[in-house]
Structures are given as structure tokens and as C-alpha cells.
Amino acid sequence: MSIQTISLAPISEKGGGSALITNKDYQNKGLFVQTYGCQMNEYDSQKIGELLQQSHGLNLVDDTESAEVAIVNTCSVREKAQEKVFTLLGRWKKWKEKKAGRIICVGGCVASQEGELIRRRAPFVDIVFGPQTLHRLPQLLEQTIKGKQSHLKIPLSMDISFPEVEKFDRLPIPVANGVSAFVSIMEGCSKYCSFCVVPYTRGEEFSRPYLSVMEEVRELSRQGVREVTLLGQNVNAYIAEFEDGSPCDFSTLLTEVATIEHIDRLRFTTSHPMEMTNDIIQCFQSIPQLANQLHLPVQSGSDSILNRMKRGYTALEYKNIIRRLREIKPDIHLSSDFIVGFPGETEEDFMQTYRLVEEVKFSRSFSFIYSARPGTPASALPDDVPLETKKQRLYRLQELLAQQTEEIENQLVGTTQAVLIERLSRKSDNQVAGRADNNVVVNFSADTDLIGQFVEVKITERLTNSFRGVLL
Ligand code: SAM
Ligand code: F3S
Image 1 (cartoon, protein in one colour):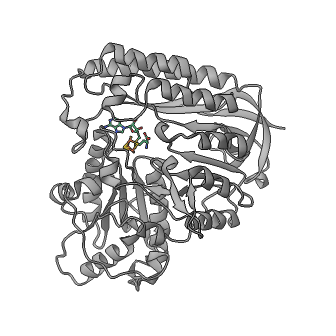
Image 2: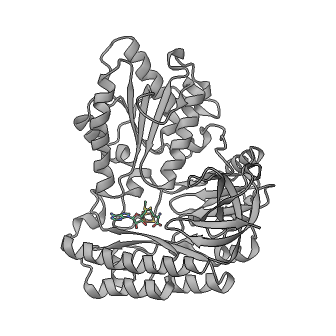
Image 3: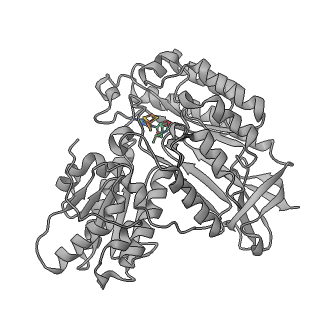
């Protein structure tokens, strides 16, 4: 992987964009951001919108036609996601040629890992930035705009370094976009699962300072946010310090965030089973605001595959975590991630995954065919499971997972759920939509004045991805 850093003037103030004297020619022009990948990318895209609004006065728009600047925030976890980026860039090349002054930026994990490839395959791209340098985007953009205006042929600006904690120092003041918000509490990952590119694209784990997390949540609460999801590749590894230098781990952070006024529901994602400590499990008992839901990726039910994936736990240890969680919250909604067709996966290995699913019972899950990623240790292993076998295993696993989703969700019909009303429903003009504690979406008739409130809703019907209910 090649990493190239351009030198930039230091930014002295919090909220990177504001210290920069910027060109006014892009004021009130459109910014289009296309996001691929995980919730971390969605969060980063939101921050990009806030940053460029504050630095250059750009306004988010829904399509490239009304935009002057187009940004794709990329994901390289699987090969397919990466290829999508180059297809999109092909379309954007034509868009850029139609009007002078248009700017194309590529951010996220593909940018981080394949900066040089983008330079070669898509030389019309103006800016490449990594997940850890998005706060420097205002300067990169300024440099590009100045270059365009001076009619010099300026090369692509690229900054895919890992300046770590600086990113959290320079994020703009958050702007709530509804009553539920994501808050990033850590970046990167140091688990180095043998199949995964994240440690190489996002760097090693580092935690956001405790006060910075608390400030962001307090600010969001002042803006009307009632539910917060703490985000990171592996939030359980969070470790920071209080002002007096004493340690603040993830369970302590959860307890602290729960004390913030008006934050009445808390979620977090993603957790790693290896660091699902007793203290974190106990939080489900001691923190009433903690939602009745957990995403805990297992990847495989075979110990030999887990070992080769370098996951650091056995299937039995995973099941023990679930047992302890269910002792506290018997009806907790569990979701997970699975990979089928990892190098060397036998039919028996796959059946161990299948049996683990039968035993644990998951509400919703994500399952993928193994995709060899360049630079990862697993990519050196022979990718020896035939594609047809991988597809069949994925199909069998997804059938079982879908059956479990249906069984678990059917049991919700007739129950009463506490729903936070988030917005107008997309299904019907006269309805609102919100999420129950276990994260399912419920649509029902209610006064729009109730948006932002927790209400009791009786679930009446299950649809494919949501429920219907009646306000009590
Ligand atoms: N941090 C999370 C965790 O603890 O597992 C997940 C991060 S990763 C971005 C999301 C999911 O993508 C993983 O849980 C895994 O199932 C899947 N994934 C990652 N690398 C993959 C690969 N090379 N092939 C197929 N799926 C992959
Ligand atoms: Fe990837 Fe494993 Fe970290 S799946 S994000 S290296 S926990």
C-alpha cells in the first residue's frame, strides 16, 4: 500500500473548516455525497457535509446534476464494493466534462488502500482522502479550487495518512439530523482478523477523548436528539482517560453517556466477542437506557476456521457470551455477521456454523461470501472453496437466518413496544415511523407533533422490513 501525504498548513481551531480562509465562489453550490459501506462511513459522510457547509458554504443536494462537488465515500471490505466505485467514477467523468469547475473527490477505504490505482484508473479525480483525513478536506478542496481558477494543470491532491487523534479534534460542531444520532467514539481496528482490510485502511484502534464524546452527545441532546448510537469498528476496545488521569473503558463510558439529560436510549456497534467483558454485559442490567439489542459478529461456528480467521475466541466462548446476555435480557434481539467459503472451509466447518445459528437464534444478520482482499494474511491462502459451493452455503445459511427472523419477528405481533418516533413514514402520508427498543421499524398513525417522543405502540402486523402498529 502506498501512502502519500501532502503538506498542509496547520489548523489551529476546533472545527477544521472554520479556520481556513476560503474561496467564496462555491458558496451555496451543491455538494453530492454518495456513501458505500458501513455506519462508520455514513457517519463520516455526515461530517463531510457539515465540514464543507461550514468551510465553503456548500449545500447537500440529492443528485449530481445540481452539484458542483461530488464525493464518493468508499468501502473496500469486499471486492464487489470496490468495483462499484470505479463504475460510478466512469459515470462521473462524463458529468464532470459537461461543465467547467466541477470537482470529484474519492474518500474512505478504497481511497486509503488504492490511492495510486485511482490516480491511474481515474486521472480525472481531483481529490483523494482517507477515512482519517476527512477533516482536512476543506484545505484539499481550497487547493483544488485555487488551482482550477489559476488554470494551471494541477495534479490530484491526495492525503491518505493516519493522523489519528487529530481527526476527532477537528470535527465540526455536530448538527442533529433528526432525533436519533450516531457518535463515533473510536477509529480503526487492531484485531487484524486475517480476512479483513479495515486495520490497513482505517489504521490501528484509537479512542476519542472522553470529554470530546461527552461534548458531542450533550450538543446533540441540546438539539433534540433522544437516542444515540456509539460507533466504532470495535467499540468494546474503547479506552480513554478522565480529566484526573483515571481510565475510562467502554462500560464506564456507557454509564457516563447514559447520565446525559434527554438521552433516553443508547445503542452501540460493532462489538467484538473477544472483548465482550462481564462489565459490558452487566451494563444491560444496570443501564436502563441501553436498548434490548446487540450486534455481535461471530463469522463462523467452526473453531478451526475461527482460529485461521484470527478471531480470538471459540464457538463455545461465543455461545457463553450469549448465554450470559440472555440471563439478563431473555428477549434481547441479536444480530451477527457471517462469512462462508473462507479458505479451507469444509462441509463440516460450514455445518458447525449452521448448527451455531440453529442454537443461538438471531433476529437479523448479514452473511457474505469470503472475498480475498489484497494485503490481508488470508489472501495468501489458496481460495480453494469452489464458487458454486460458496453460493450454495450462503443460500442455505440465509434461508435459515430468514426463517429465524420470521419466527422471532412474528412473536412481536400483539406485543406493546416503546417506540421513539423519528420521522414521517415512507409508506403512507398520514403515518409516522420510529424504532422500538429492539431496533425494528414501526409505522403507525399519530400526530406529527409527536416526532421526537417515546410512545407505546401495539404491534399489529409484520411486513418484510418493518411493522405496522397502533398508538396506545
Ligand atoms: N468490526 C466488525 C467486527 O467485529 O467483525 C466488522 C467489520 S467489517 C467492516 C463488517 C463485516 O464484513 C465483517 O463482520 C465480516 O463479516 C465482513 N467481511 C470483512 N472482510 C470480509 C471479506 N474479506 N470477505 C467477506 N466478508 C468480509
Ligand atoms: Fe475487521 Fe476483525 Fe477489526 S473483522 S474491523 S479486523 S474486528
